[in-house]
Each structure stands twice: as structure tokens, then as C-alpha cells.
Length: 185
Image 1 (cartoon, rainbow, N blue to C red):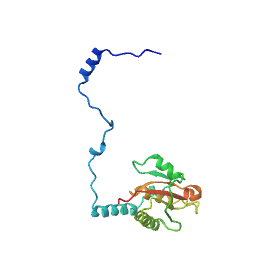
Image 2: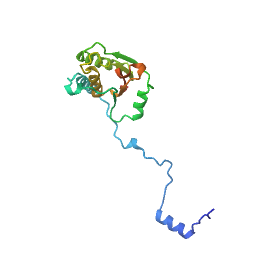
Image 3: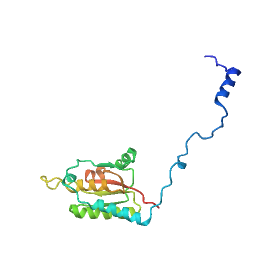
Image 4: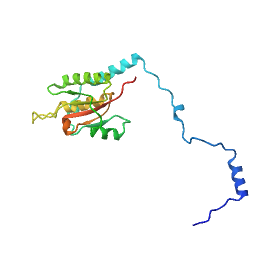
């Protein structure tokens, strides 16, 4: 073992002179709450404007490029959402609180049904829902229309935090789990 080095009184005095007066600190973390401005609470008018903008984005016509095949598995997270949230969603760790089946609807009808479903789900404070869109494989000569449209609508909806293709027992690539933002209290 090495011997412990001792500090002479002269060295100790020089150190204290160089450092000066010090205060003991109980917490070495910075309190960020004092530095951030407090968010303004939105008015009823701005909430309605936000709702209208979400509806407008959902109802916006999709271009032909938006309706191209998106691949088998769908996955999306809004900016700032952690990857662990998507992993939990994919593994089915969030309990499903409601679902909508879009089979049999054309693209225009499905857009309206999905919009109303998401609005109602948020009003009921549902956080995790399932959207069944199907795989669009009835006609081998046509590409799917509804699945890529649902993919685009959900990505454009500000109420959606994340979504991904469902597990096989919940519809597989013919359905998505959708995680919704909480409504402010």
C-alpha cells in the first residue's frame, strides 16, 4: 500500500487564500424551473383554432405520392417521443381502450370516420387505440389505398404521439396501435 500524503500547514494556508470564502452547498443540481418562462394557458378560442387545424390537416387531400405502398410494417413517433415508447407500443404493453375498423370504407369515407374516432377517443381520454385499416390485397393488380392514407393522416395529426403496426393477434400489418396525447385538464 502507498503511504497517504499529508499537506503541510503552509500549503493548506496557500490553498485557502487562493480559494477564498466558500459556502457549503446542499444540492449540486441546477433548478431549471426558475429559468423557464411559464407556459400560457390557451384560451378557448385558440383551442378551437387548434382543433380546426387538426381537422383541416386530416381532411386535406392526399397526393398520388402519399398513396404509394408504404411497406408492410408502419411505425412513427412524433418529435421528442422516446424510442422506448415505440418499443412498448409495438410489444403491446399499453392497454387498448377503443378501436375503429375501416374495412369497407373508401378513402374519403375512411378519412371522416377516422377523424371522428380520434376526436371521440381523446374526449373520452383514451390514450391507446387500434385502427384497423386492412392490407388492401383484394385486387392483386391494384396497390393498397387505405393503408398508406391512414399512415399519412396519422402522421399529420398533432394528437398522435406514436403509432406502429399491431401484433399478429391484433391484426398484424392490417392494423396499427395509436398512442394519443393527453388532453390538458
